[in-house]
Length: 417
Image (cartoon, rainbow, N blue to C red; front, side):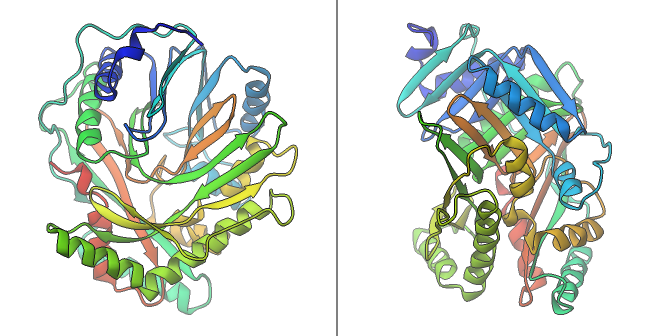
């Protein structure tokens, strides 16, 4: 670990502006952002990049990461790749490779406890990035309201038929750039946009990372799984599924009422319990017997645009559980698919009719102390055309189609001007 680094004297806001400036310059930077309140990591100058649709690559990366304590791996696993594996099919080639992971030997960790610098990252640039005006036009769904409501009705038909209990249905949105953006200018625009997003709606599992075809912009609050390995090699996994949403209100009184309505909703609590059960079972496939624990009731999670219900499920993993086993059991996450998972994945594919890409897959960090994975909700892909974004929610038997549509719109608020 490097000491006396110029990064150590910067505030969180100054570090964020410096990271964004490096992204804007086109530097090789992966930013997994915990915001001012949580731990984040920025990895520089990858010396190896794996882009693959071969599931065997996961185990190969895992083995190399464990042999190389002086490096970190950052990147993502796409939803579609993971869904293919759950459904027992060979992953199909798509625009976004199923696995995009980058190895770096220089990185910076930052958070409430300070900054640690590893390897030889670049010094902070002299000119810091500034957010600038919101550069995107309004988001528009590719589905009409009538189409979305019809899709909800089809999902409920599957529930009535006994195919599934809950279907996470997502619709796709698009927002064009207000001005023409070239490939050379894309990093600068992405960095400025991320600073604006970070300022208005900070998220504990945010990210800015390059993938083939563009730059991923994530404002996710959701942990798929964190695995902490102690000095004795004991690995403890923590999953934090989110299920249950209410938009934030404009006055304190109305906002408290929205929060209390969510906490008291029998429907939302039933949805949440269903997903907690699914995640508990997924972790149980990898856990020491008797070590899986879940709370009796969810906690509240208040974000700048919405209220959520969230639960933490904890388990001690069996010896020898690796990244491939974690991915096979947990990706895609239960909160963004439904229950039972396998049949629901088939229903989602038929209803949505388009790939999800990184949305609802996993953003990944492999480091010396364990594995970190977030679920990339509130996440989109920036390219020279603009921002492609998905948003959705869990459909159950008593869902009201228009209420579900409005909930999905509330989840995109942070990406509006």
